[in-house]
Image (cartoon, rainbow, N blue to C red; front, side, top):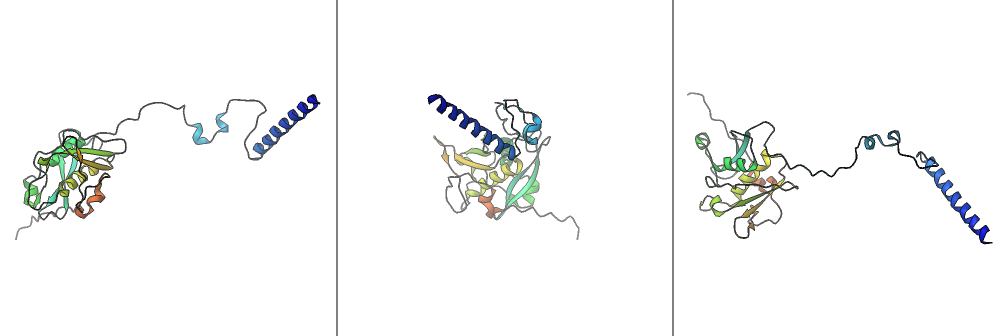
Length: 222
């Protein structure tokens, strides 16, 4: 009896496998009776073009504003501090985030001043390093000397200048986290509504200061 039972079980297994093979064949998947290596013609065209998996480490983001360019755009403020104003600058070499903020910290030049442009950043106040993590968040550590001590000045204005300068020139920077250079550093994502935002800030955070192109001075003579 045991022999017959074993034989019935083997026949049941064979029948189940045969049924599965018929089902796969009906779905358009080729079935072989013996194990064979997959052929490229049996694979999805996109998958067949993929090579073996690798373990290489992702490369860090590029550190230039644009390929083969030393031009950048910094953001100053109009005299009433109602909006930012983009102005063009050049640098002697490829521009990194820290260099961009150093250029921003130089403030307005003579032409900018004649156009009524200013800055709420203290002259020369720029971090030596601006690391950017894999999520595209730049870390900017500031100290109290960063801000021009103007009575009634809004502290978010210089943060907006920095945010727009970084996000405009470096496409891989998606947001910014500001820290005060205390020990330990304290998060300082100060926003126009007077709050310290826990999440990184973006250009949208400071949309109230939407940049406006500077008006061109008339050269006509009366």
